[in-house]
Length: 273
Image 1 (cartoon, rainbow, N blue to C red):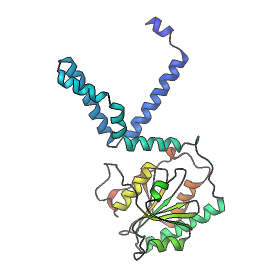
Image 2 (spheres, helix red, strand yellow; image 1 turned 180 degrees about the vertical axis):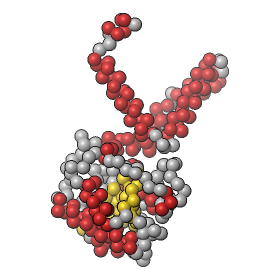
Image 3 (spheres, rainbow, N blue to C red; image 1 turned 135 degrees about the vertical axis):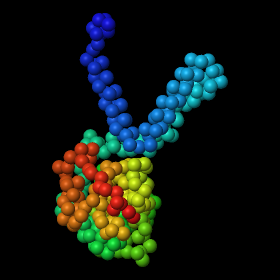
Image 4 (cartoon, one colour; image 1 turned 90 degrees about the horizontal axis):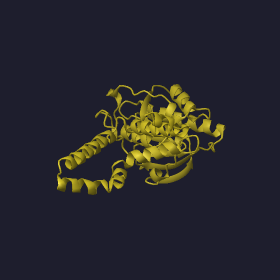
């Protein structure tokens, strides 16, 4: 024991801290998702493998040994959504982020137009999904819709979601100060803790917010409420001024990193399509 303590080096302490930090981030990422059930299942397989060896069940041991020889590929397949989200979060860190290319005046004008359009749609009870791109590129989602590359304006945004518009049943992607695409489909949230009364539009907003750092505005066609999804959580914005302030905080250059933004999830009764 004394020899072990004497041979302990500073680099060993650093090594332990790095491993602990990685394991902590893995458990946080898997918390409250279906991945935790998959981890428990893999743990059960490991226990069964040891038990088969202990009781000399040769056929069962052979089966488990062949499974573990492909465990890396199995983990990639099973945890593909979580691994993709983790890599996206790594790329969103300030170490890899560049400064925004949109000038402050252009950004302020864009946010004003987005707020004006959302308020107009909410007053008419017209459902809408507005996606504001940040540091994570959303080209793989935008390419599923109709490319526009048009200068963003409140009137254009409202017209895209009018019931008779062929692009109203989908999301609008805004990149910089331009509308990149409309009529886009978003991935639905994989969170099993969501209430069944949450509509498809809100689930789609949360799904994209879980995988990217985009800010997604949702207008409910049933209640006329405006909600904002980011970081895998949703916030209710009751009026136009609070929405403008929230967007200003999120898109300001002095904003804290995304992982430090605290969100609250409201009561689920209003969460309808």
